[in-house]
Amino acid sequence: MQHFNHIFFAGAETPYETARYVVFGVPYDGTCSFLPGTRRGPQEIRRYTWNFEDYLPEYDLDFWTLPVCDLGDIEPDSLPETVVSQVEEIVTEIAADGKIPVLLGGEHSVSVGAVRALKPEAVVVCDAHLDLRDEFGGTPYNHACATRRFYDDGVRDITIIGARSGTREEFSFARDHLTLYTAEDVRKQGITAILEEVTKRLEGKKVYLSIDADAIDCCLTPGLGTPEPFGLTPLDIRAVVKSVGPLAIGFDYMEVCPIDHGQAATVAGKLIMEFLAVHATSHNITNSLE
Ligand code: MN
Ligand code: MN
Image 1 (cartoon, rainbow, N blue to C red):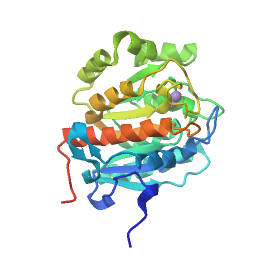
Image 2: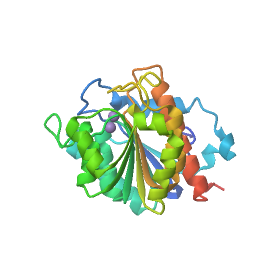
Image 3: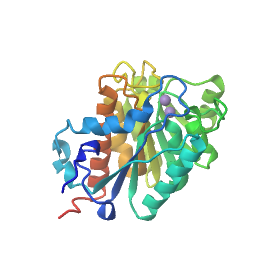
Image 4: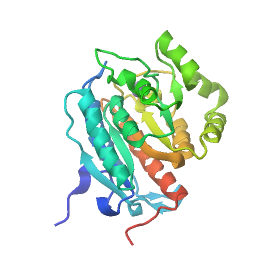
């Protein structure tokens, strides 16, 4: 009997043993600070992938032939620090098996578990928010603290692209310790020029790429728990995925809150496919099914 796979990421048809990419969802929004609902992000992203053609003309690639497995969703605990540990544990196992993890969020705090497991040399984050608070709402694992945790865990090379929201202290921390390209910088300099700088600096490094859905302007993808206007476009994020994606040892797409008409989940699903396609083609990872 065949499985009815519609709740899985479309085209992710490879069994875990032979997969090179492992998708899993973290349906958790326990520390959400404004609109709840990112716990429904992973399933909504998957649902909208079934709308897409499997053939990716730009890569001349049938997506289903990529060695991608979808494990489904983890069952998250209620405490954020425990969910971070759950994610760290599964990502450690995926990496030990020589595979690349791809997380579907879920709130941004759980990316901390993936970064802890993978110990990348650099992190690139696309986010409207700096997420550099030391703690928020009584916990250092609030989603407003994600990027600060990456730093405190020892990742010193952190690039934030698309930020336009944070406290005075967060902005001064970012300017002192990280590489910051605000949404306004992207508008003025253009994403192509910025990415040339970024990829030159990161060449040869092991990079973790984390996309917070709210990096994109809330008027374009309204399915966001903490919406911000004057942001990046889906094409800007696609440019990031295409140029930084090949360097990535792990990838996540977080903070999709399906309270819109599917725009946020649609963009997420397509960009995850884009990540898988660009990473696989640049590393000559192709059909493991034949
Ligand atoms: Mn974030
Ligand atoms: Mn954000």
